[in-house]
Length: 288
Image (tube, rainbow, N blue to C red; front, side, top):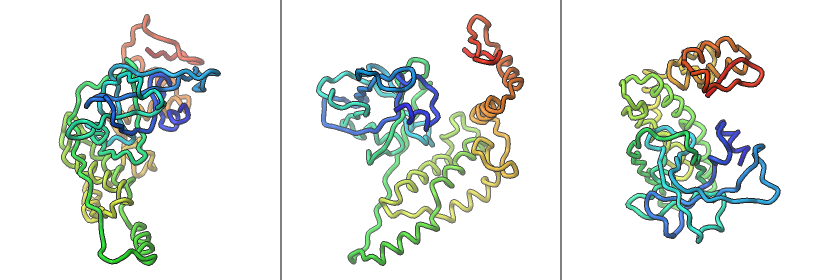
């Protein structure tokens, strides 16, 4: 579990969050509720000598990575159900309601989907954005039996398909630039279109759906000439992002490369009260 958190670059207390698989069962869970029983880890992210488990109770934030739309972050209510105690380190969703809660998160279908779940007290959603309608693409069928040649031809066709990574990079540009000046950047119509395309591209192996390459090309030609620096492209193809993601990215680089004076300037601008400061090890930097 600890390695999963590190892999996803989530520096949060390990007993306040998890990156876990999800499933849905017939149970007493109501719409908007979930069940999480996690194994308590020590400060090194390791299991205790005698395994201990705890049930989460109260508000939890659930999302997937990547999260291309603000509505892909859901706030649910975790409840304690002894009937589900045999299920550990997974999140159990309710099956009640017109639309299952798990499907509201980036159109999940529980085919091995992993979720980031946070139940600590420091992070809260300022507001809940209405989930996006990720209507599954129609599967491609053929009337005759599928032959080995059909499989080979399909595999070859995927080599020239638009990748989910390319779509996600375009989405990052649109959201970062905020051309349409939306308060919630991921709610721009073009960002929503790309979020849906991204979902379709991820599931294309199951549906056979092929993204409209001409549409992607037109978006790239108009908006995708340069990338925000936090995507890690070479300097000639990058620009300095002024979004919070760009600022955090550059601060992280300054920390990694030991540019402490740059970070000191950042902290001084935050007007952190001295009594609320904590000295960072080996530096004179502070954090709350």
